[in-house]
Length: 239
Image (tube, rainbow, N blue to C red):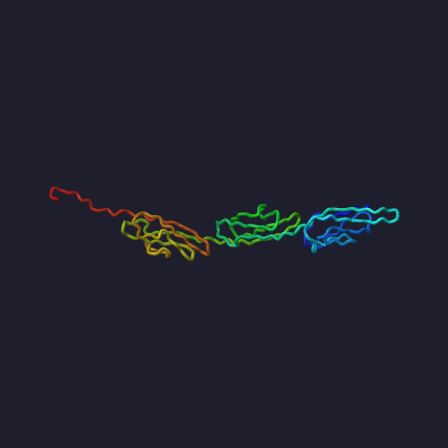
């Protein structure tokens, strides 16, 4: 008698040839159904030209002399090698959270140990994330390089911080950003200037947002407005 087997029993398309493990009588014929490429003399399977599926492999030995004929069989599976795809922005701002998504297989293993089809990442500096996509023992990998851009520095100022109703104050912002926007624009001489004049009628908090390479940061400044004191009229006997 003879026995046949393949290791592993689950093969992957496109991985070349896989020999049979044969013990016992030699000289038999290997065969299987359509879709698999198998050498009838050696039992070697060519995964490059085989299609995914489940297959019975038969090994038939004809009778010779006093040795009777016999047949042995084994079962194998051929899986498709997945194509790992990884989507997500490769550029982010410091402090942001980025979602990376993968597909192409039935199970996933990320470089951070996560096993879902997507992960949320918030790296403090440039980072490379990779994922192994599996379809049984058949795997593919993909990776993405994330560049973390620094947010602009920003400090909002007012000189003076306290004014009398009807007066103005000079707002200013110290930043390495390339553009700024003040809000609210109420009583401002310019909402996109570095140092606008502000003439609010009541106490107000101005916020200013600075942008650098698509990343932004915001600061606020309080301007306190005091009511102008009026002379108090006190009537007398002659008024």
